[in-house]
Image (cartoon, rainbow over all chains, first blue to last red; front, top):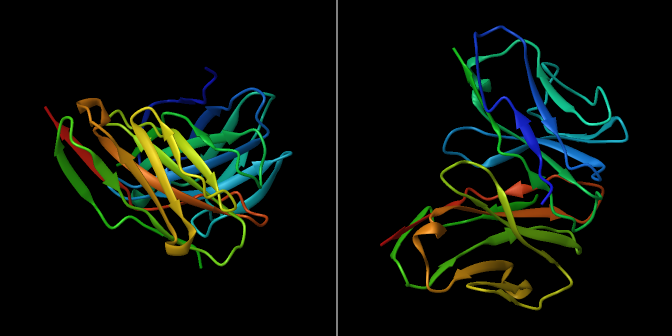
Length: 115
Length: 115
């Protein structure tokens, strides 16, 4: 079964450094998402992306965050200057269609640890 | 405002017991979508089921069943004859029917099944 893949599985970064998290969505999916889960807490929406544009973002997704689809397969989340509170599990997801009952399929996540 | 409440933070059962995970949601949308996801100890988020607001038919899939009741804004999940492999955190999630793809997650219920 096709799946969303995320790399790396674990990223350790010094505070203030830039980090890029990578995702390869399911190939025929057109809608892409990032969520995060701070340890022991619920999963929170960050951003949705369609047709090379951000379609929706949460208040968490401030100017430090950006997303990009640099080629036909990858979808990346960049955090420009990391803070301690950015430590979390980051999940990428994709869906075939948006604004519908189509489920979002999640990757295994990247655990980001900021020192 | 949209909200998902999973009042049970942790449930422990012995193998072969039946267990029901509660989910109560709030939304003003007339069309909306509900989902259950499983997060095993390995950390990934696995899609289990979706339900449209206009489809109140309950569903059974093997040992899993879901009870959607619009009148009480609940979408409960029952595991029959639980197994150790069912041990995980289970998240209920809501998506509105308008121009949004944002999944709003509950805080999750940690299910521990002991042999």
